[in-house]
Image 1 (cartoon, helix red, strand yellow):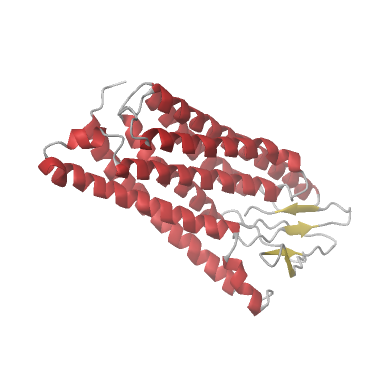
Image 2: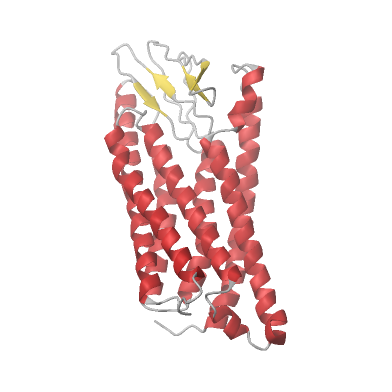
Amino acid sequence: MAVVSLLSANVATLCIESLLYGVFLVLSVASMYMLVQRSRASTNVPWHAKSTLFITPMSVAAVLLFMTNTAHWIIGVYRAFRAFIYFEGGQQPFAYFNDMRQPTEVSQTALLMVSLIIGDSVLVYRLWIIWAFNNRSIVIFPACTLLGLTTCAIGVIYQLARPNAKNDIFDSATGRWITSNCVFTLCTNVYSTAFIGWRILRTNKEAQRIGGSNLMGILGILVESAALYTAWTIFFFVTYHVRSNLQYTCSDTYCAIAGITFMLINVRVGMGSATRTTQPGSAIAVEAGREGGGQAFRMEHLSVNITRVVQRDDGNELPIKFASRSSVEHDFELP
């Protein structure tokens, strides 16, 4: 691999992260706008209950990711000004960027770890929702890997923040935590995406058998988003282990990639790329009712002769149940 200087990597990082943050910002605004519009259009939900539609795990995750990404980008811009203008009169930018114990470096790492934990938590939550809460064994493995990721994130931050830490990101002690981080987040994403996809394929087969909608669109969205995140994780893993300065670019843009992956699903589904409407003569009857202490709304089941499957990704936790004359019943939702 060609040698990339530390200064070149950090300048490129600022440009790439700014571009990715701009993409993330647009997706975030679009996602929140669609959430607000859908909640206002929910005429079947009582007016006094509509406010709780904004307080869902998905909306909270969206806000938290927006905060961590924004803070991460601001610190990145500050570090650039600090290195090239203010630190030692702008004469020692290499020394500034090479100091892993800088508070701004530790802060950026902490924000990155929080973003990764939020992203993986959302994926495990989606897996739990799609399996309709009735198969706890499905989420045991990703829950364990999520716990492992959280532990390793704390370990990475501690290694960088301790006063006597080695000023080397490739230090063996820090490297073990970083490597474990990559392994845990890869396991969570591959496992969860695989089982979500399997559930969608099974549901699609049943739906097609009774004349329902094709659900392959939602599967494509999930796979594409997972592929983006997985590819970036592998890219970082490789550049780190070959001790290339490109790993700085990968790690500092990792936060934006995690946010884009999350928002991209919300926006694409919200724009209708994974929504199938009912055919003439078909019917879907839904009714919102409180459950879970008033924090969520669930569609009540109503059997009809033939219904179509509607995929939703609006963060309102409203699973759609469908049934046919053959008594095939499923709960399905992509939060």
